[in-house]
Image 1 (cartoon, rainbow, N blue to C red):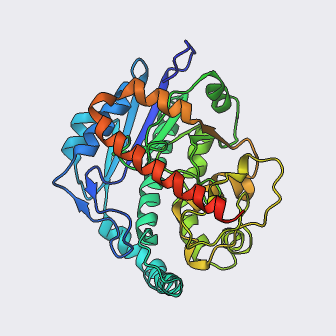
Image 2 (cartoon, rainbow, N blue to C red):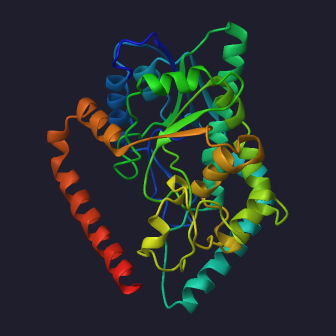
Image 3 (cartoon, rainbow, N blue to C red):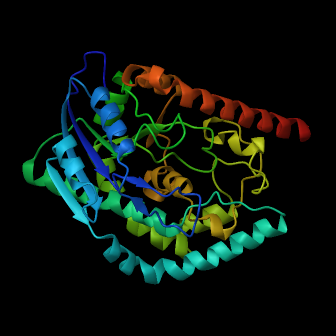
Length: 356
């Protein structure tokens, strides 16, 4: 991970969620049905992580839902702690808060796109998002209890998922090496939560959620994200709800139905002079997972400072990819992704020309 001879040596890796394949997220009526016949992404993720962390003392804590993939998890990671949680119990507990909310927001969303003459299935169920966040909160609590009982000190904590390196866009699915500055960023923060995550073009809307390096204070802070998510998206009086609907920080206004509008990809967070109107999202969009991570890690009162989050560059991602992946065997998939990305950039360029 850290390649310059630093003292950092002990890493705690937290893996949660389903280790098997799941139904694609672009259908709000499916809350993430597991496909227990396929663990290909699980093994690809394990191969990437283990090569990335070669040479360091690594401990794993792993959780799953309903004991799905227990044998695969135990054999592959030999975790210090393994625990299974009940998805049925979770759904029963969350039902009162989110079932009607999800139905109502989807009706409003469908009506919006109908008036625009569009069908848009690029949406994830708030129940599926809450399930993912709950699995992360649960594993964070397990890790915190373990650290408190054993007094073990970790230089870095990595929170990620079993299908890492295979799921999501290229720039967000490959955890990177950490350099000396990253180590100092995490080590000198004391009680302040610190997070390191990948950068992508949609920071106006939200932050990537595929992997996070963090310090112990960050883990403590992140452990409450699931409970806060449900209350924040369902209350019109929450700070998060108001920010999303009245003026989203570090954003730029654009028509939401225009998915190639260049203004949403301007990454205002890196600009010193922000002169454009802020985006105001409809209330049915506040359940967005990326948007909530932007709020929780950067905008919320107790993390609202420039130093809470650091982003790894595209160069860092490419360097880690080539060092930890047999890229020659993936060149076919990468070529398809490249063509798709070039097509995407071309459509964004057309939107920029049209608005001149």
